[in-house]
Image (tube, rainbow, N blue to C red; front, side):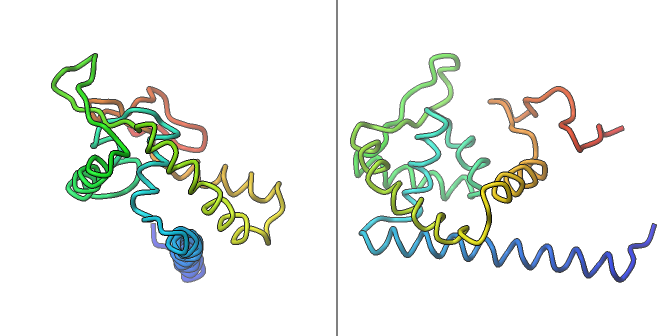
Amino acid sequence: MRASPAGDQLLYELGRLFAQGRRLVWAAAVRRLEENGYSPLWWGLLAYLSHRGPSTQREIAVATGQHPAGVSRLVDDLLEARLVRRGRDQRDRRRARVELTARGRAVFDATRPHVLGALRETLSPLSAAEKRRLLALFQKLMPPAEDEAGAPSEKKPRKGRRAAS
């Protein structure tokens, strides 16, 4: 089946707006963090650990869209700054898990208002209902979460997605 020119234009515009929207939100957050002396890359990892709890570096890489080698270097930096610690997974001793330290939690708590302020400012043209709708649409686009072994953790297709045949 061949796409129509109007359909192609719609896809192009969506892609362009996704990219511009990401830059707009990220630039505002980065500006606020850097103005206050914080690294946005560090913040992203601290935020992930704050919300998800102890995680493997692979889980962090998949969830944050970063290359595993980059996550490894970032974790090393955060270990040196004593913001995270690395330990063995109690369920599978072969896996290392990364978790926040008390100092890492304090840094996250101190930086969170800067990021939320940037998000509030950037998303201010949207009503609360529009923000909820946008969240639902983005969640619909996201692939299912993976389990520790890398397999999809959801057994059934999510609403709005068809099962692969």
